[in-house]
Length: 351
Image: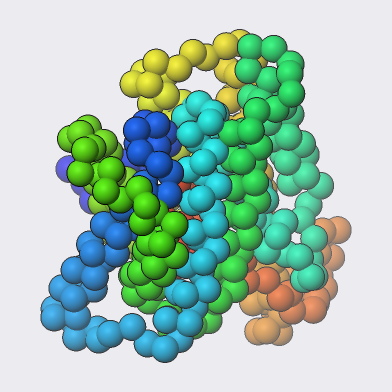
């Protein structure tokens, strides 16, 4: 298999794993308290990350986490835990398909939050794409008919907002720094484990009576949706373009819908089908507009630094001011799993 095809397969596999994670989280949370699910998921991820960090240290002499990585990872661990609380409670009270689609709003919300307080607004087409996503949200939350939004859908919307803030924070903390994504992720998993230990303590004895199916789902969430997806994404993004990676990883909500319907027995109504189509179209459009806008700003700043005249929008030669713009790297939606891997690599949140 050619290297480019192998890379595409790996990225598509990551998108499939993330898309299926909503159904896994939903079924696990239906059999085990949400806080217990979160603690076990974090704890297993922390153990796996620690093993990977130790292996990398032995092989490359990478060393332990630096103080900067511990400080940044601790802060991001708190924000990531907030995201997963909202996501896991949300998916427990809505369909896995809706959860995967609603969280994809992160793609259009992140650039808005990342540019807050900065110069250089987004083009009107981006806000048009955001409007398409808003219409999609209304259709998805209507279900089989227009009604009051359900609690699970509202929690997923809140999760999308908080996740967008988390990804923007990752971008700002890691911009121009030597923070290593793997070590940053390891710190976050340890922080998450510590945060959920006490709240989940009362329900931990129930794990002794948990069946193999639930344990398989917990292992899948921790090892595949978090650790494997992060490592695979890191490997693949280094071997392809950010645009191609974003395109393949952007199929995640499609896989969430397919998993919910094909494996979870969820029903797709006409309204939700239309909402799903609009959400995928709106987020893809918004992502492409933002990427093109960011590329143009970077080229403009580079030309200004080199003193090379460049064409303005009217086609005349001009020089412009440097543009301060360091948005988070190409990002996928990031299922209720990690969140840091994406922004850590641009390069690519998160885990």
